[in-house]
Image 1: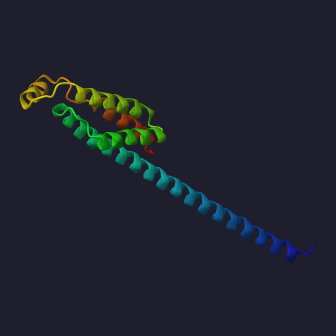
Image 2: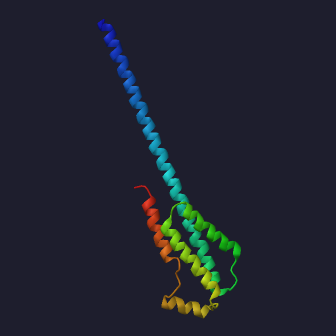
Image 3: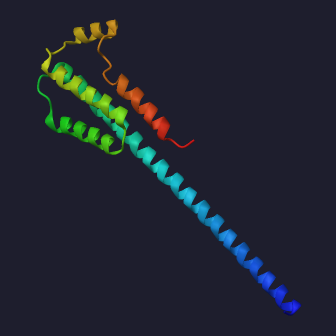
Length: 148
């Protein structure tokens, strides 16, 4: 074999290997960036769901303290949010959210509270925050889901 051919084949092989390496590196970078974007998007969805549940459940609990008639559309919305958490695999949050739902339902069937009753409850610190366990469970799950 002529030495010129060896040189040409070596140069060509080096170019091919360099091109493949560069292409593979670019592909890996794009893939990791896409994955990071997807994780960030999923985390934002979970955070929005938790925030919406806390807001809606707080309003329902406040309403339950002064009324005996639950508002069915809002109650159904809360159950839908719990189901969405279940789909996203937020198991600890779901357990706590179901307890919040039970607490809201029970509060609707309890005697209505007056403003003086609410003041006394706040002073003694009893039974005012049914969302505490849910908030803590969600914080832990969101922190565990977030990329490092």
